[in-house]
Image (cartoon, rainbow, N blue to C red; front, top):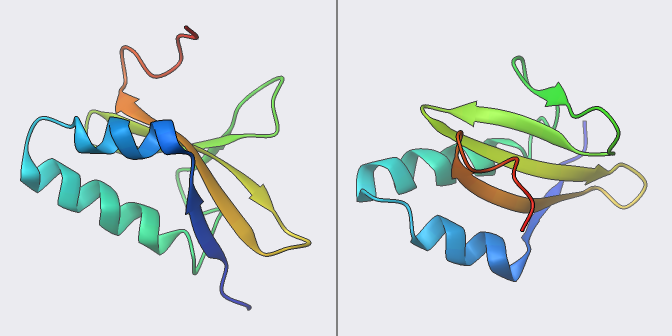
Length: 88
């Protein structure tokens, strides 16, 4: 299986930097990096109504989309589970 490249939306980078503890940030980054090998890991869910997926890392959620034709995983949003699904 080919390796995907992982790209971030600018706002997702800011949200990742705003995560409370460094330990949580490191775990989230490792989880995102694992998407390069398998963009649909066990536990990932497709969001209804969107071409987006989500994975959990502790109390945080990572929302992303997959472009299989270009082998890209695009991280859209990172945040606490109580806030991540709300649109602004």
